[in-house]
Image (cartoon, rainbow, N blue to C red):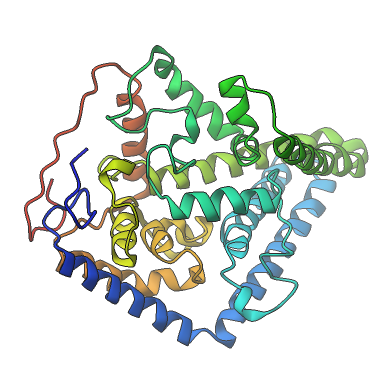
Length: 377
């Protein structure tokens, strides 16, 4: 970890206070332009997407009810997996961020939305919207950074248990929604420390168990029973769709947060109170994008534009692709690396980091910035 200069731009020491202020002004201008452009076309986008998700899910259920052949099972399962991915990524994640609250539509609101996920919305919002986005990639403060169980930075001391983190990461991918739910409820914290649950944690746990019961009943009891003689086929299809959704969402999150070269920060290396510009710089350095076609961005919930999402978490995600070139120009003008690569490369890089930091003696990766050259290390 590089000691921070007075500006607080810990991994970009060539930035002076005037550079950081200029970055803040340009990012604020991008944000203002998007807010001023919001209108009927955006409202149609999210409403059509919600309808499309409903049609996909209903269609998948109908196909699975009558599935008597392996091709029908695959069609129904794949369609259901797509519906679940859309529900969690491009719809649920972004609605719960408040990206569509400007519409003042009670049917698509961060205060009323219920998604196909084990995490109760209010617990997820508290953990993700408040903690993660305010303290992005600050060790010990960003709860999403390794979820408290993985070594994700060279400055974190190595312990023998870290040898298991590649296995743990794979298991987490398969049960991702349940891991996130335990994490959001803060129950996992007590499990790690051995401390008894607080009254607030017990309340959160009850809400989590109620939400989990609804999800388990829906996917593994109600729908299979409705299938009658074909209940085994529906049960296996639901389990497979949930698995695919979990692995996909986990992979997208890894690509945006954990590839090699994405910066992490320590509280001591940051100012006591960040300016708006300093906060923007931290988001810029602590995120990575995925390049690819529009379908990939849609299925990733536009978290393939993780840099833009971290900069503007409450802006509608359908604008991220449009503003990405303008955001990248700010990086280039200030000699910062715009971390972008295809999905397979980002995922491989993230897994490489998980494997590398699971071993002792990983050491501190050499970091070198050449002022004025974007992407130099």
